[in-house]
Length: 177
Image (cartoon, rainbow, N blue to C red; front, top):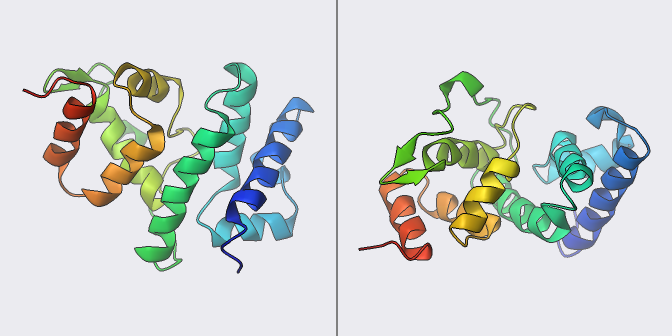
């Protein structure tokens, strides 16, 4: 596998997914030919992730956009190759286990829900019904002035330390005391 050309190949896959969605294709499994699917899988990316980006691109004025998607998938890809040694975990996050959307940690709404979603994204364990960097996540990131990939990188760095992530969010949002 060539690593250096990942951003270029990801751009092609992203643009292709956006075009497929615009053409009316609503089945992630049909977005890509087998060779492209194999390339995505070799990088820890599911066709569903590209579908989610394409769907939101069309329904939310271009958000999250290629740049955010690339940043997110670079962090996921690094985790996949470095921590998971190129192997999928085989697990899927149970949506019913997520905290309510209104739950708070230290006065920060959405964060209790975002943390397990981010871990699931990092590990490749998101179910097809969830997207990391969905509309609710984007509202959170904008409100707290956080780049989505930065947040995912914090979760990677402090995977088992919620307090460190919460402290970082508070500092980033200018709310640390």
